[in-house]
Length: 536
Ligand code: NA7
Image 1 (cartoon, protein in one colour):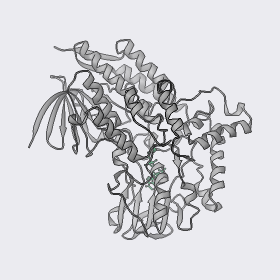
Image 2 (cartoon, rainbow, N blue to C red):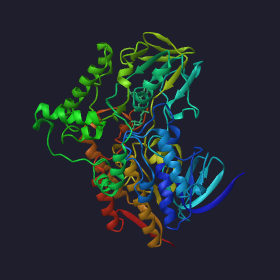
Image 3 (cartoon, rainbow, N blue to C red):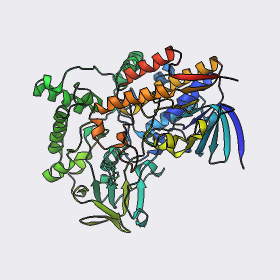
Image 4 (tube, rainbow, N blue to C red):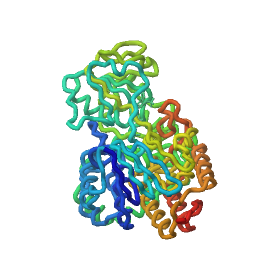
């Protein structure tokens, strides 16, 4: 039965972004509804229950900073937190701030249509509800639409198939099974060592090898936990003022201004620390100059050769076709070592491409592999995927899909010209994907809440990014992207993992610090680049 209701703000998604956005708009005294497709809170951490799922940012920084009380009462026990513990934390936050009462679970938003005369959004759900709201915040996440490979026969397989992003709640026991894993990104790198411990035979189908650093995950000592708690304010300040949402000392030195030994020692510290961001930021030119970047690539390749005993397998695992850091670097816990086991095999799909999935397994151009289970660790339609799934129509009935047919266009990654009163958390052309996501999320949500408060204070019915401001931001973001090595690599960062997706860098590379300064400046100048329409 259809129903309708009216609120001030609709928020789509109850992950880390959506929950905090709800908290913030409630504090403005606004009525809000959150619509969430899952049966619980957590977003990415709700869905990604695959074995070994773990955050690649240290727990000290991958958490909310808005509540000092929460920071003090919650204890992160490990250096890098696993999925279950993050989900426990997000559920704790939902309870502690009494957020659940405004969240509707198991419901998808199907369309959002802007009513120009009422200057309000009409949000439709798959449970036939229509919710009217002045503001619409898309907190749909960057890795929330999973992607299967474009290979024939997927439905023919008679064994069990799993995508890492839709893992069964009760887990999977692969004991005694012949398992195939397709993909070698972060999800595969994290799950393979665990699947290898159970499976009788594990075959990994690799198209592009990943650069991996050892996570070096370990329990935090009581002293470390106490130190973090005593210094949270300073740590958070450093986090916010950093390029990637993790405190780091920026350098203006080229990789070639130092000796080979000094350079290696720096990379070694990043390697030992499981800190790929420190390596990416180690020298000023490593992400813009191929030769400088190659010094990191070769450092990692040497490490791979030192871990993986079979020289042929080691070479196949060595990335060569792209620059370090231009695909998300993976943190591994026994990934490379897994290939030292006799029952773990590596298939190089560059040499013997995937032909089809058959009833009994996987066929490449060279061989047929009989399997009991296939794990698809084949990634996501990232950043724009979840937004484009919803039929979003702004002024003049223009659909967001049409507007973005040549690639996403936003102002600050937060607003879209012609789509008034709509905001995006972790949107395209925001720095989120290149940062500690938690730090970016808080910055975005705070800014959006302030902007909504401003519009209401000003008595505006509508606040819309101007086409000029959007144009300038897109040009600025793409000029930075073009000056780096990121655009040379096919990855989800550039949208090139999805057929026919426009090849555009989906994040902003100017740094979270500079980006925050720009956003603050826009706000200080009465939301420069936005057009306000008064209530008529
Ligand atoms: P990723 O990083 O996008 O990895 C997907 C993997 O799947 C990658 O190795 C792909 O190879 C591979 N893939 C995708 N399609 C195919 C086909 N058709 N054939 C063979 N191999 C294929 O996704 P993840 O889930 O691992 O990680 C996503 C993010 O989560 C990660 O970046 C972290 O931020 C956390 P390709 O590289 O395209 O050749």
